[in-house]
Amino acid sequence: MKFPTGKTAGVAAVTLALSLALAGCGAGNGGGGGGGSDSSSEKSTITFIPKNLGNPYFDTSDAGGEKAVKEFGGKYAQVGPQEGSPDAQAQYIDTEAQKHTSAIVMSANDPKALCDSIKNARDAGTKVVTFDSDTSPDCRDLFVNQATSDGIAKVEVDMIADQIGDAGEIAILSASANATNQNAWIEIMKKELAAKHPKIKLVETVYGNDDDQTSFDKTAALLQKHPNLKGIISPTTVGIAAAARYLSTSSAKGKVALTGLGTPNSMRKYVKDGTVKEFALWNPGDLGYLAAYVADALVKGDISGKEGDTFKAGSLGSYKVGADGVVLLGDPFKFNKGNIDKFNF
Ligand code: RAM
Image (cartoon, rainbow, N blue to C red; front, side, top):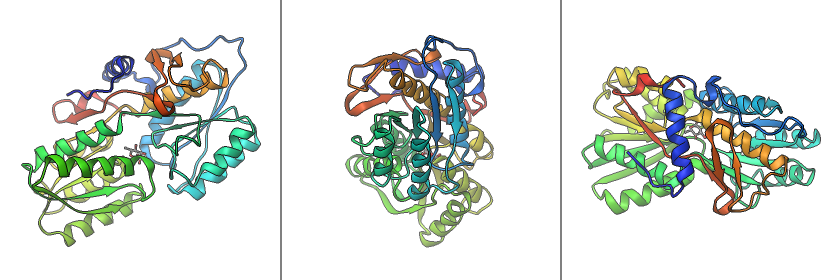
């Protein structure tokens, strides 16, 4: 399983990250590391703003960020809304700007709606790094992408095609309707389906807003509305876990395939009971860890954010800024019965 990223360091990093996760000491899990900046440098205050609080994915990613911030001797904080909405997120950006926080690291609930707040923050001297879900590239300093959008979309389409015999009706259960990351992946999935899987028909895309109960209810509604449904792709960790929980006790268990993006800890049970065959993700702890180092490098002026800038991200090694101000973590990884017990996040 390999997805070309065109970035050797990223591939090396992901190999390292996965081996660390295998050993139970990934970036988010309190493993060793080092390689942070000189302690004589000015301390960075770095605040993480996830899409929403209480989402296990962001608990892990932000713990990775905290670990990195401790390594380079900065000050870490996490604030954010209960619901994954842009309005709720904007006020947290405004507050950090007023406090002259050195850098905000955020996963954006909307590509444009946060740009005014981000501009004010940057005018006030705060560096703004997006990770996981980007804004428009002109709003922020840098975006730390978990994997290429092409790679993420293709792995999901490949998995569903494989699981339903490359034919039949499928639906998508996404996060919030404006989420930059999910919308980018869905667009590519649609193209990929049309180009390579003519017998698969995408009948509907619904939005569970990264809320467990909403996602659960939307799954039930999808199955009721589309009696011939053969599969669901859920490109969100909250959505796929809620859909798996619904399927696991329904008559559709084992008949309607479910795949997408999930965390091994939230999906383990459903892989073992046969509800889910295979799904994918990256290591969210490493993503947060890398994003914190990116923020620190910007704050310290080690990089300006232009293409070709290089920096060291602690135990993950060296990275390079690519086109459009994007730093790439690596490739997505597929989890199934054969390997899921080796991961703990
Ligand atoms: C959810 C969030 C996040 C996404 C993962 C896969 O936790 O929507 O943005 O990257 O799923």
